[in-house]
Image (cartoon, rainbow, N blue to C red; front, top):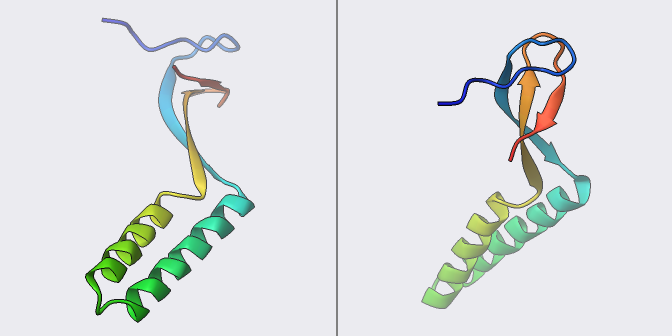
Length: 84
């Protein structure tokens, strides 16, 4: 079993972290898809196709707009390195 990696700058152990970043364009796109999905859901709810498309668009919008990066972060100096 492998141990925790060691920081090359200060020789302290590192821990796993996930960094979340959202870009403005991605967040705006996600909000537009969310609003469009809500409009389709409300206006076409009486048809099964409208309800399915609206719900799918809402669920899709929840995952859009941001990125997550898996990194190793030093416990001492807070240096970060990308994980595989």
